[in-house]
Amino acid sequence: MADDLMLEIVTPGKMTFAGKIEEVTIPGTEGEFGVLRGHELFLTSVDIGELSFLKDGKRSYYAVNTGYAEVTFSKVTILIETAERSDHIDKERALKAKDNAENRLAQMSKDDAEYEIMRAALARALARIRVAEKQ
Image (cartoon, rainbow, N blue to C red; front, side, top):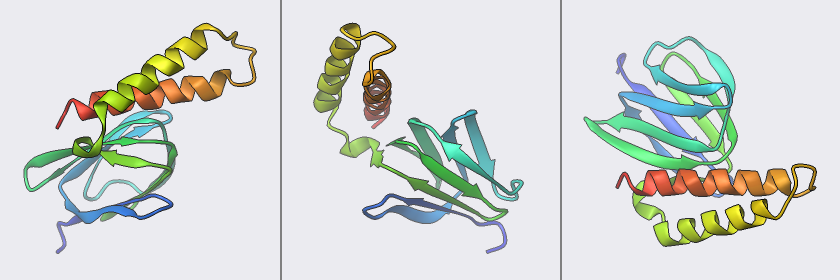
């Protein structure tokens, strides 16, 4: 249909989602952005965070890792390291990952070689917890 907006969320392992949607909100590295049908064409990077989309009046939430998004007038393609739907997230595991990352960060200086790795692990855990709470 002329008014359709297609969304594809692709991870290295599988096509996580493919279908018609009404709108999508994506965590870009320069800030969160939304896309509706007819959006200006662009390619951008995606950051760790919460991705959501509206389909048939119902919002779905995903915790996503870094990647890229290509936006055309009628399609959004997201190539991402990981994407977990809210109802598939083990919140207890995410809480343990958060605690582990916080504890390790507390023992490091910003000059430590693993500091950025742990900072990203904490960001992923926090995103997974936020998204898990939106089931």
